[in-house]
Amino acid sequence: MKIKNKNDIKNIIIIVAFILIIYGSVLLNILLPDTEISYSERRRLLKLPSFNIERLLSGEFFEDYEKYSLDQFPFRDEFRSIKAFTRFNIFNQKDNNHIYLVDGNINKMEYPLNEKAIINAANKLNEVYQKYLHGMNVSYAIIPDKNYFMADKHGYLSMDYDRLIELMVENVQNMNYIDLFSELSLDDYYKTDIHWRQESIVDIAGLLTEKMGDKLKAQSKVYTEKSQYPFYGSYYGQAALKLMPDTLIYLTNEMIENASVYDHIDKTYSKVYIEDKFGTIDSYDLFLSGAKSLLTITNPMSNTDKELIIFRDSFASSIAPLMLQDYAKITLVDLRYLATDLLGSYIDFSKDQDVLFLYNTIILNNSYMLK
Image (tube, rainbow, N blue to C red):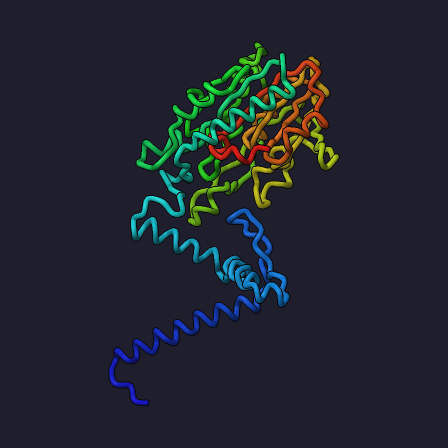
């Protein structure tokens, strides 16, 4: 075959390169061992789906295989980074899959406000109160997500936070509302993660215990700082860009070091801070071992018999240790994993207890996950 001109050569090169990329990727996908965990995305990747004639004929096998192939695609993280870089820096898109950046601070849009979900959250709090908490000292507080400080100011969509608070105050009954919105700022949160920084919320812990009746000032609590670096938060992998990681700082003292944490489901004991969790899928799991349905922290150095029950999400994992000085025990309940009807089987609600419902705005806006 005679090549007529340079355009023919260029077209041939493009076709050959395309074929090499496609078939090379398929070959690499077959030859390379499957990756079990994506640390950048903080999740387990899909494994090769099981095969049988029934799944083949129904099309289920091909559907699962397509998802598996995408998860195990060679150089997946590199292609994700190229896509993110292109959207932000070449096409000047404001976000990539709802992830956006402001001065190195990574966030994810949460929009719009789901009023039905907020009312459902309020009803869930009322349900727990009616079943277990009559006559007890019960409070609730709402933790604003980073969008409250970032989104509207920089032209991004966000929920109506004033309406969220209004709906909660209108619908939650028999509980004292503790305002945290006016007490927090963007600097109190990690740049690469959804959570607040423990070293920035000592005063918030003091405010919560004070509003629940304890007069001990937060400033009277003395802590030693320990740190871990680099901390790649949950938004870091979703951004798929090379950005500065955070430093994870955690606060300790003799009381925290001597406290024990009991997992009611696994029936195991551990410490408040699990340093071995740092560097795993979610380094924030250093605080109280991460997502757990029911934990009790016992403080053997307490000078009181008073107890605290926190109905919570992951934000409470870092603030609960800062409230330990004021209680003999702190029980943490995650209704995402433990049904309300089962609480009486695990918790004795007849003792001298304060009760705090502590949820961030994203959980409230998706409250149907609460059981």
